[in-house]
Every structure is written in C-alpha cells, then in structure tokens.
Image (cartoon, rainbow, N blue to C red; front, side, top):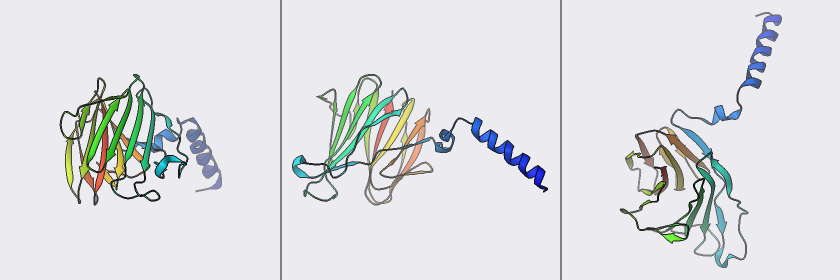
Length: 197
C-alpha cells in the first residue's frame, strides 16, 4: 500500500471513531450490557472508620436504578471471611429504597424501611421489582427463567458466569427482554438478581 492511501485510510478511520457515540459501544456484550460497579465498602467492627471510602454509584442503569451501594461488615473485626454481613442498598427511579441484607444463609429484604416477607426461599417481590439471591455451590449450573423487562445481576461472593460473561466483585450485567439464561458458579458463589416487573 502506498503512503497516500494509508494516510487517507487512517484519516477516514479516525474521523469515524470521532463520530461514534463513545465508549458505550465497547461495554456491550452479546449477552447484555456490562456494568462496572463501585468496589464493595469494607467496614471494621464498631464502625469507627471504613477500610475503604465507598460512595454510592449514581445512575447505575438509566431510568431504572438511581444508585447502588454494597457494604461488607467484618465479623472478626479486621478481615473478610465467608458469612460476613453483606448489605446491598438500592434506590430506584420509581422511589423505592431497598436494602438486601445477607448474613450466612439468612437473607432479609427491606423496602422503604419495611421488611418484606419472601415468596419462597430468598425470593422477594415489590411493586416494581423481583429480587432473588441465588446460591451456587460447587461448580453448579442453573437455568434461570427471567420474568422482567430488565434483569440486573450483581455478584456477591465468588465468580459467576452468566451466559458468556464472567461476573466478579466489580462487574455486573444487565439483560433486556431475555427469557432465560444459564448461570454457573465457581466454588461457593452467590448472585443477586434484580428484575424489573
């Protein structure tokens, strides 16, 4: 290729890259949209200070979830271990404030400070959302039937593969209008599924 054609081709590619809508293109997966989450806040016992300074992530998913904050409270006072209390706080664009609290095998869900009663084990429903905590022990695989318009997957413990995307501490996934998806955990993994209904 001669130099003139090379320069012209490079100029066209550069101009095309400037016109494209931005990095949103590169964050999409064939399975859905990958969401980069703030790190989980880690708190020592008695709450005198945070190990990490964690601010709620604003506008997590446009026109749906306004903020998301995850916190882990160390039972032994100084380091993370399985079974530590874990809290996910969510504010929706429809005015619901949720807190999902996990401690060992126990799961509690509060909406606007009122405790919800689970429909089945670890399955809660509000006016606009369905919330599930999925426990994947070993290298187990489950086929999940999705009911909502949007489904948001937040990893709680371990790595979880949702379709073809691997989720871990700071990577979540949003699926739009999907009927079912296969999830696979590694070792003892937990996954939070929030669906808009």
